[in-house]
Image 1 (cartoon, one colour):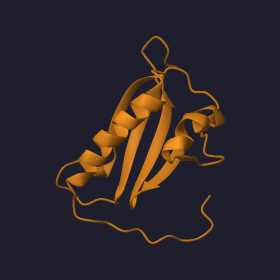
Image 2 (cartoon, rainbow, N blue to C red):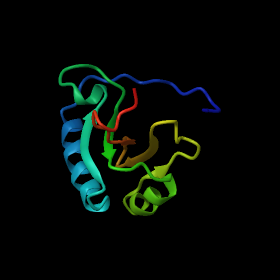
Image 3 (cartoon, one colour):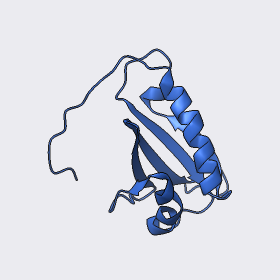
Length: 118
């Protein structure tokens, strides 16, 4: 839970957001050692032409959702910080700020029709 109120800033669409995602995706591929099914740019910055909070949201579908500390060992060398207590029922959140650009990394379990719960 956030302790202070943060001002929400909405910015005009920035085409650099797509490039930030592409670069970050490659970095994540190198550090997650094939433990994932997909890496996807999600959220408002992924939609061309709309105003958005300037945070690049990335969803990583992992084959098996492990404890956040295990991912922290792989992701902290590239600037990601585990948001302690953020392992919600279905995902783990990491944050990063790199050269002023903020990223939210959502690690979620990959599910198929045969593995999903009714």
